[in-house]
Image: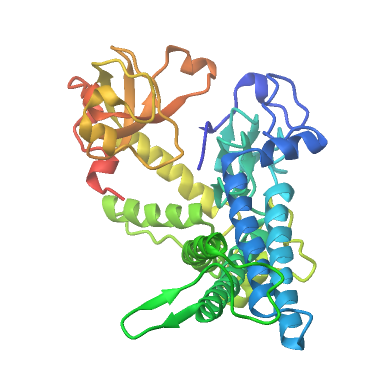
Length: 434
């Protein structure tokens, strides 16, 4: 979600609009031309995803040739063409989601009306205001338009420009895996059927050769059987996991939300209930019709509607209804934050062996960073688990516009500062662990 950012007026060195003076913003992880694409591809997520596609597709094509030879019948030809079609469409949408990218807020962006800046947060890294529905991604190091989440499998964010291709990939991958699974099952069944011999008291399976005339073009031995069984497991696992992700994505698309905005809406209800304000939060971008919401993402041209900065809103709301709620939640988080002091050093490793067994095995399953602590450091904790806490380290240079350090740290490494008057209330995460 949101990375380094600040509510209100930007620092003096970064008040200019696009192309203004001040510290040079950090570029996104994409480098120039093909080098950036290679860097994005050379990551464990895309490598694993493409390996799964390659194994399932290659094994399915080999098994299809064994089970239903495509040159003998029209059915075999259709089966093989469909298999190729799944592979091509899956890879096309996968690479589109990866390389087209989500779209980034222009560096130094400011709203057309200067008075609208009061409704927006300022990003110190990009030296620009965060447009409505945009969030700063720590991985991409840019403010992403209509950010849904950062996906490690495409090593990129899912957002405004690639939401449709990413969702199509989530749809096509399970469909292709279902087809491949059917081929695997039928191939193993027919091949084993040709090799099984029944005796009076035993059943023998001869994997050396099939009793077929003519002999198959592709031999099906024990290794081929093991490969088909392994590919079947991959295909079924992918169908379940990716299919669930597709259902989640469609739920948010049909309400014209993102995963982050669903979380913001939930926190809005929690804030209103906590303070008993009596106000009602209405999500501004829900068009009131699932079809209209669907068309906000999927278009015949493949280009999403709008420019990623200005969005149509429903009656009774305006362009900054959501960003105003975000500002309220930021202020509320500061009020509910609790000050802690570090009593032990912590190196910032993901799984600290020296901090106890419970801390080691309950490390947060999140891509959010860990922050290193030295004895005496002050931290503002905003949420917590049983053995871990999340917060922001209080730096002496924070007033000078330095980037803040946020992340997880072991609970046993800190103790509550009793003298802080704002800490006589539970940590947000302790009140309601989500």
